[in-house]
Image (cartoon, helix red, strand yellow):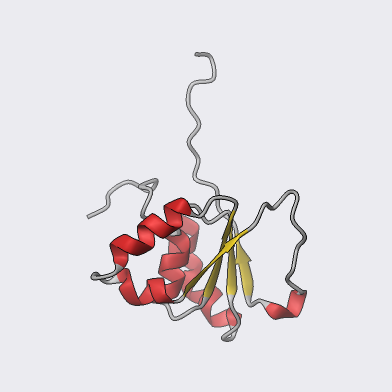
Length: 116
C-alpha cells in the first residue's frame, strides 16, 4: 500500500480527486500528460479508460514503469499510454486545441532546505 502522497508511483492528490471528471470531460479524445515522468498520473487516467499521450524529454522512467506494469492491475492502463518524446522548450507544439480532451501537468514538490 502506498502511504505517502509523494510516492513516485502514486498519482498526485489533484489527479486522484478529479481524474474521473477529467476522463469524462475528455469525451474520448486523448489527454496530454505534460512532463509525465514515471507516468504516475497517466496510469490512473488509463485505468479510467483514457488514452494518454505521455510527453517528456526523457521517457526512460515511463518505459521502466510500463515494463513493471505488464502483469498487474496497471497493465491494461499501460496499453492506453502513448509515449511522446519532446523537448517542451525547443520542439514545436503539434497539438491543436480541439485535438485533445485535456492537459495535465503536475509537479511533485520535492523542496528541501535551501539553506544547505
